[in-house]
View 1 (cartoon, one colour):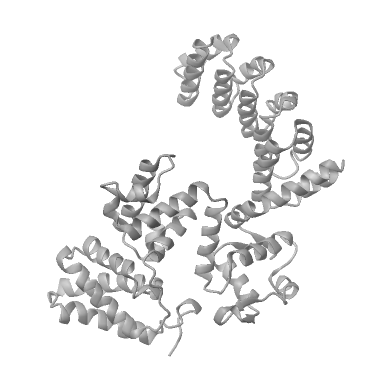
View 2 (spheres, rainbow, N blue to C red):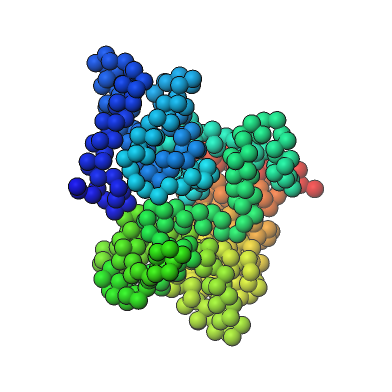
Length: 463
């Protein structure tokens, strides 16, 4: 029998064909479904393919009570089966699948919800989660609605799970789901790197390999360190000693790095540039950044303390752009003003526009950056001019009022808008007339007029 792919080792074509026939028998024979040509076509061409898609993506949940609820919801909301029979019909359909597919089962009732929220935290839209899991959209909507209601009830207060269970509406969720949502929300609000860990768990789940989150972080860091220098064969050769625990209790070791690397490429966490060299994707770099930033910031500070600004700059410029962007933001807050100014300005115009924008953002909190930011107001790049306006508004220096007023005449509406916003933050009475001209110009862009009006309101309440 031909195996479909490495993630579906038990789902051979023969199994899929037999399962499709068995599901049809449940609908048409066991439950005496309709036999009209239109009804038969709907069952065979819509209901069964959709169920097969869901079962294949959740083959280890066939005995899971929450997954049975998911199938029941599919029958009710997608296929209009009456609530009175949907639960029993779902049980029969799952029993058929259990009898044909031998896959280790996960019976923890929280697992289907965990998989849903892993995808959600990873940035997937609800339609994408529907496609990835096969869960009905109404069911996903309900989960998120319940999370939002729980979040409103907690609203930053120190509320215990017991208090939630005593709330009339929340307790209707049931203990398992409410406790899961409570723990999820608590971790999301207070646990460092919780989002990042969930995203990595999702990747491991998709790869289907025995890997711990810490192992995946290490592998991604190795790829980051060699980014743009090694192709796939070279990296595999360089890491030929990398193994992961396998077997009962992790007692054995297996060389799975080629499989893991291929998996990371297939899920777009690693990509190849035009020269065939490996690099992190934007998404994987963003996730990895959370784990690397403390160490990178420490290395930069050590270099600065050793009076080695060249080394500190080198550390910055050797980072992936996504990681560098977040590192700049962190350093702007943590370094003293002199070190922050010297380091950030030394990296300006060295990498990309995106990094330059981040540098200007960071300099908005550094007093001695006034002259530098004023100079950026004349940059040829309108995005940099607009960002310089924003930074000057946050810096709060009166010396910026006249130059910002000049930017109200900039040729680009986005720059004029940010200049108006900055003047409002500065409560710049001297710019009131120019702002009034912008606000009253019917030929002006709407966003610029609105920004000018808001700035005038801020100026009018100046004490």
